[in-house]
Image (cartoon, rainbow, N blue to C red; front, side, top):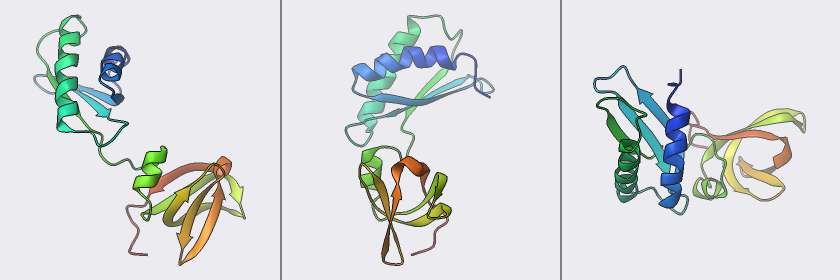
Length: 156
């Protein structure tokens, strides 16, 4: 269950991240901990999210939080990177994970199927391309619901 302060915390954190050239991708407020822990996940859209990115965001967000009364009492602020995404959505992710095993799920059947697995080759404006046993499969982007890394794939 999402803590009720999360929307307000995101409203505060998003412009702070934006001013630093970063994106906020998630937040969790763990009030069951003592002191409570506020974790904000950030991403650097220009490259890998660095420790320096996290440190800058931490300093700036701490200043912004201290100027409000959103969180009463002591808390721990953690800034981190969300790590490797399971679902691929951006051009950068599709480029970074070229050659990795993926599972593609479709909204509507394409060639009688709604699920494909294979190695990601590329994505263009019309299709996502997979390699299945050396054969290229083109799946129309408008039919695709998700493209996810396949953590359970054996060496293909």
